[in-house]
Length: 140
Image (cartoon, rainbow, N blue to C red; front, side, top):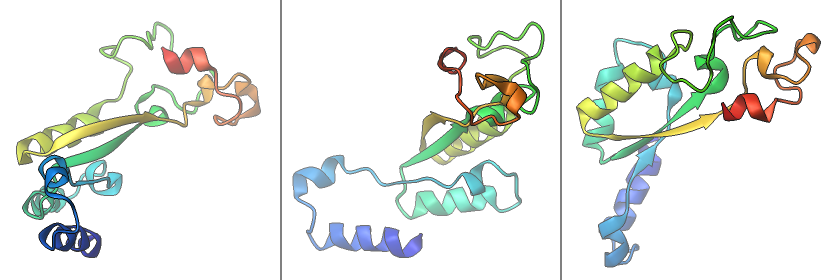
């Protein structure tokens, strides 16, 4: 990571990027392994990113990680998928990561992605969450 970032910074310093682009150029990173798994070094790693010039971090919001009962063949009773405040959602890791980034002055950029929970499959009885995901459930 440091070599790649160093190469970008050197290219900027050397004038390889036009001046007008350098004004709007944003430097980002994506490292869910650091952000979504609590560790004693997470905060210091994010601080290092900021010190290295990172100003935006892409954070993957995986449907199967925040959805309730991801290994179940059906969603929990009363679950309202379209309500982000539904008590069944598991936002803990995402909330912690966003708070850590904002505290460091880094903008979080969320990318909602799959795969989904087993109950989101068109045929959950197959036991494969990847099999024909139901687009209506994903949209909700």
